[in-house]
Amino acid sequence: MHIIGSELTAAQLYDVLRLRVDVFVVEQECAYPELDGRDLLAGTHHLWIEEQGAIQSYLRLLTEPGRMRIGRVATAAQARGRGLAAQLMKDALEIVGDTDSVLDAQTYAQGFYEKFGYVAEGPEFVEDGIPHRTMWRRVP
Image (cartoon, rainbow, N blue to C red):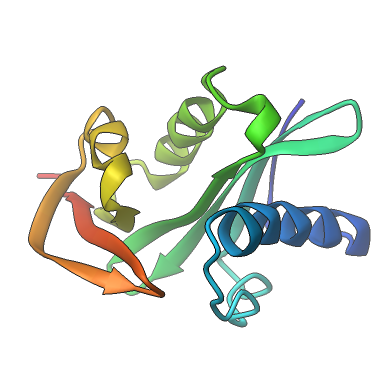
């Protein structure tokens, strides 16, 4: 089941945070400020794929001045390799439409985002101990 929403129930927020912490904090051993205050902002979209009552893949889409920002793309370890994150990217780009969008990709995932028209700009940088590249999808 694909879900796109701007408001989360307490249970949905709990499941989203659990997946993001499982992937980024536990699996990638990256202590970072997960609760950044942006999940509940107006203009924030949450996209996820749920199977058997559990969130398998998730993506957050933020509205920023003059652009949209994709982030927190995560897929549960047991659900990888099935194209779930790619489906969420397609869904996100439908929302983005003709607006420029940006994301900070973990460097190893740069090729994944290139498939959706994102181009790396600027040098590699390290965020929370993990190499990243800023990538843009600019709409003419």
